[in-house]
Each structure stands twice: as C-alpha cells, then as structure tokens.
Length: 387
Image (cartoon, rainbow, N blue to C red; front, side):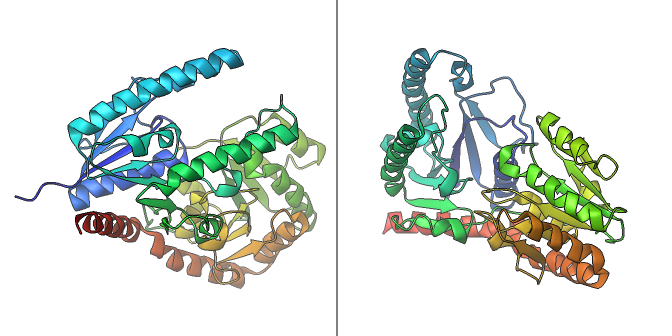
C-alpha cells in the first residue's frame, strides 16, 4: 500500500486574523479534503489559543511552546540572549518532531526556522514560502540606530537569508513581479495565493459607496486614500468612502475631521462579514504603499466590484489587468488615484464592464487551480528526489 503523502508546515502561530494564517488554513483544509494529505503544522507561539480560522479536524497541530512573543519587552541585550536560547530550543524540539513524523516535504514560511531548517536531517525536502515581497522583507527598522547602520544591518541580514534560501528545494513567492527581485536565485517558483470562495451573489454596483479594507497601518496608505477622497468629494459629495479594518485610527480620524470629510468618509473598524460590505459597494480602492499579494483585491473582484489600485510592489500588477478588469494607478500619485475613482463613479457602463470582467478573470485564482499548482510542485520535487 502506497504511503500517504505527509506535509509539514512551520509557522509562528495561527491565532492572528491575518492573511498568511488565512491562506495557510484554506490550503491545508483543501489538501486534506481533496488530496488526502496528512498535514502537520508546527507552532512556536499561542499555546492554548484556538486558530482564528477554522481548521479541519484532521489537520495535526503541534505546539512547540517556545513563546518568542514573550521576549520583546526585555531590554536589548536580554532580548538577544533570550532569543538565542529560544532558537536552540526551537531547533531541538522541531527536529525531534520531524524525525518522528518523517514528512515528505516540510514548508517553512521563512520566519525564524529558516535559520536552521535545512540542517534538520529528517529526510524531508525543504520548501520556502514567502508571504511578503523582497523589497520590504528583512528590513532592520530600529529607530534607535542611525540610518546608515540600519541599512548595513539590513544588507547583511538579507545576504544571510539568501544563503539559507539557496539550499531549499524550492522557494515560492506570490507574484511574478516579486520573482523579478530574486534573480540571484535559481529555485524560485511563483504560486499566487488562492481565492478560497467564489460568492453566488455580486454587487449591483448602484450604491454610491466606495470601500477600502485592511489593517490601519502605514503600509496600507489610508492617509493617501483620504487625501485622494478629499479631491473626489469636491466632485461627488453624494458618494461615501468606508474603510474597514482594525488598528490605531486616531490620526486618520483627525485627518478626516481637519479636511471636513466627516459626512462622507467613515472608519468602520474590523468586521467579520466583509463579503456583505463588498456587495453594498460599487468600487474598491487600494492605496497601499507596498503589499505581498493583497487578497482584499482578489476578494472584491470575486464580488464583481472593480478596483482602483496603486500599482505598488508587489501584487496588484499580477491581479489587475489595467482597464480590462480594474484600474492601476502610478504608485503614490494621489491626484491620479482620485481621478481613477471619479472615472468609475462617473461612468456606470465602465464600472459594470470592469466589474463583470473582474469577477470572470479572478476565477483563475480559485483554490482548485492554486492547490493543483502546489500539488504539481510537490509531486515534481518528490519525483526528482527519487531519480
């Protein structure tokens, strides 16, 4: 009898409501149900906390109980010493488990384990999977150090990472745009994140409402969007912008107040049923300064809602076909972002054409297709190993 394919993942935790955890959960649930894989997930943090996204009961979760999160309040020297100690414990516990389970492939999500995963001789092939883009990954940002020193540390840190990635059997990134930044490597593969659902209902695109979704952080650029909305509001004061996402909203709310946008621009906080809000909206705005692969863009297109998005690094260029199923805007150009939003507000036929194309084109990212790409990669690596 042929041995069941065993696949292991190493990730910090699953209790965060973020994109990486959501995508991982969708994939492993599909792998268990459709391909019959035996799945093991190894966690370093969050023992005793339930996964934020529901896992199939057949997925095996192993808490290594390392708790890196607990060291970040320590003074710098103590933090470094505690980190090194926890890294040694992490490697020891993970190696023991992998040697017991003997997976065919172990997937690192390129967090702390990438520093030693290749050295664990459990017999599994090692694959890396990055949910960020290279331009903004491994950047040392401690403001207590001068800029030149931060840049030097970032450069050394990236060189160290490249040495580890070269040893992987495959290194998977989320977009072809990002793959272009890893040309020093010869093991890069591109597999997009999957759309885990395809809704039956779509937006009629008749409500005078624009939607934006994401964590309230500098990365998401909602300050830029509010500036653009100030220009849109002058031309279309009967339309509203609703921003959904958790985080520190005080500065953005002050900005809204100072610009006199309190009647048309609203910070709505996080919400569980974001699909309903997509259906209530007529266009989506993405103002991020950078991304890995923005799933909110994929989701809104599945609801037939066209997007106006900055062509930031990386992801939007892989998702949107400019002027076919959405509009791409020069990254950071606030006046052009406002013009793009106004173009879809003012032309209902254009809005509906792009929305219909978006819903149709985004089917290529349904999980059936993306999961098959992963299976093809895994099967190919196993065949090559056996040759």
